[in-house]
Image 1 (cartoon, rainbow, N blue to C red):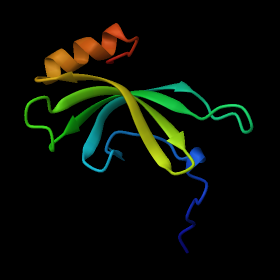
Image 2: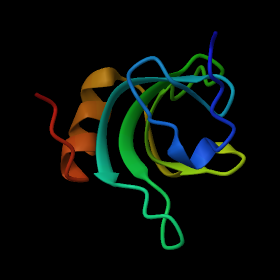
Image 3: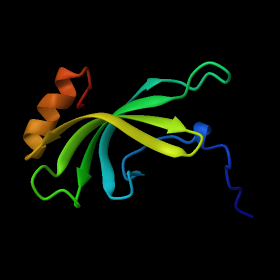
Length: 95
């Protein structure tokens, strides 16, 4: 029997997670844990968004909200190399 987690604030972002319906997480680092009654969990993530042909790579803050994952504060890039640089500039660890 599969257990479905209805509390989306407890979901975890991992490589392969889909954000904003078309972007796939290719690297992420958790920034903050969920504290019930205080804050939502959040991650810094590099995503590949096939729906954006000009800037398919984006570095977002991803937050586990009640309605699902919410991405904000994007740094949009043309190449993965540029996205990695933006990720590291925002404090992400690429190792």
